Image 1: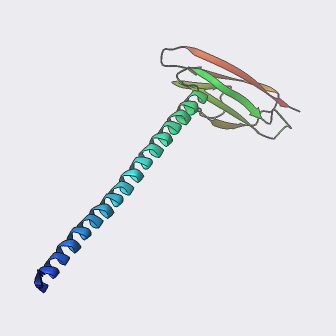
Image 2 (image 1 turned 180 degrees about the vertical axis):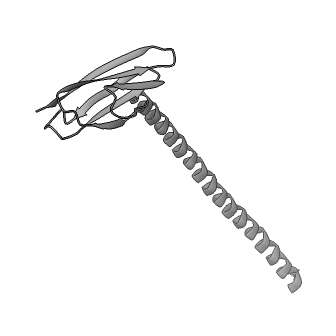
Image 3 (image 1 turned 135 degrees about the horizontal axis):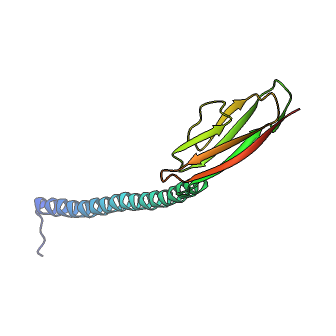
Length: 149
């Protein structure tokens, strides 16, 4: 009967098997962790691209609502449109792509703005004229009347 009765041979073989199995398990665990990190990074990239596209669309909509590249008086109104003698009203305006803005009769300093209001206290019903001028010298005007009762 031939048997290998050398205990050192058995323990050497056991250690080799242990090391081989441990190496395989370690590589599997390392592969799994690497895949988790890669998939999360890829998922984050997709989310960031989607958010960036939404922000671009929102920014474009905001620019368009502010007049885009058009030269325009977007709004000109009085709040309230009718007042009692001695009271005041706000004249509010919104312009896009204007280089300068004037208000007649002049009550307060005005400038190109998406949203700006000035306070007026007329003694009688008054019509105010807002005139905007762009860089090329084109003008646009709008009028609003504040009624004094």
